[in-house]
Amino acid sequence: MQKPVLIRRLADDDVAAVHAIQVKCPLAAQWRAEDYFHLARNPGGTVLVVELEGARPPEIVGFVAIHRVSDEAELRNIAVAPSHQRRGIAGALVAEALRILRGDGVKSAFLEVRASNQPALALYTSAGFRPLYTRREYYRDPVEDALVLACDFLPT
Image (cartoon, rainbow, N blue to C red; front, side):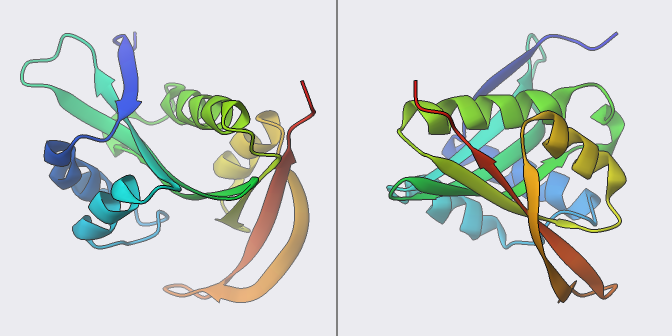
């Protein structure tokens, strides 16, 4: 059974854990550790982390990095530690990211995903994303197409 989790904003001392998760997840975008720090400090940036509740010391098991510009946003990176995948953590992260974006007045959210990443495509589709177009040979190592997906928020 999955332990209870807390989704919260990135703290400065979370950056190393977030980067370590990213490195273990080859399908995640491979950023430098300081990129998370800078995005979290950017007025349009948000990095959310998932922490196992009650773990001592605190254990970060996933993250999502978001960037907003005006009334649009992009989910730029997301990963869950391999030992905690397939437990609903990514879905909870996406749901919380979309809730925050909707609350911030964002009208549309976008993301890119490897065309072969069927689990991620299923997750994003269930969260309300739809395919827009394909970027041919967008990814490297290995070369692969990216699907660009969008989620439009209905006015409340």
